[in-house]
Length: 268
Length: 33
Image 1 (cartoon, rainbow over the protein chains, first blue to last red):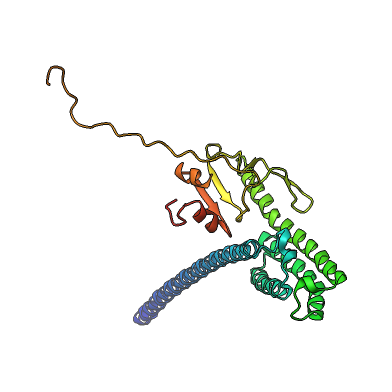
Image 2 (cartoon, each protein chain N blue to C red):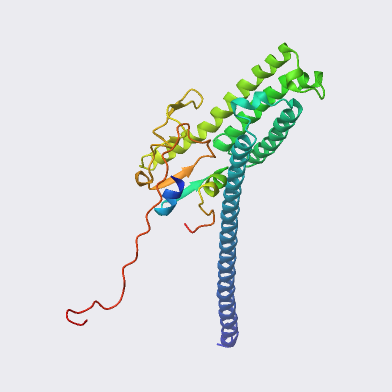
């Protein structure tokens, strides 16, 4: 029995050791949980950041695509490069400089679109590529011709060079015009996909050639009426109507009715 | 037709060059949607 206190001591220390072990295990579990929570928080933060980056990237891509389309269409229409009478512009050097500038702007737009990585699917990228390639082919043919006649107006050029320039302008215009019309085709398809009915309006009736896939003009400026549509999208700034539009009759001014209490019979 | 569409309160959209056509038709480009 003399060993009893010794056993008690051993028991007590074992108990303390057990309690210590339990406490340590609890602390370990708690720190594990904290670590897991922190990891989860980091993961969520990273996911949020990734989402934000991809949204910003998408927005930037849309902005760049819109800018590229704007540059192509507005320059094409404002400089009248796509018109038939551009061949009558006798200042060939200015014409060349204009196409060069246009090509530079479009090449920069295309390079910006490539960085987004969706160049295979982007319509804007396809349009920019087509326009850049068309301009490149034009410049390759016309630059040596213009260099051969520095400062000489186009009407003084010899016949063969004049014809060579005219021959270079035509495919340039056809390719770019078709590329721009493909946008109209894409717009038409998008409207159809959304279960709506698109109607193509143009200055004159007929067909718009969009790279071998003609688009039928369904209304002209003379025959279209606003009541037929719920919305209108202006795909560029088309030229004036081929047929004269009917004159707009000004609305007659309808006199307003007199307001106030209605006179009662026998009041005056 | 543009001004008619605008007066009828229809949605008007567009890209490059649309501003010029809208201005020519007397439609303000900053009008509320």
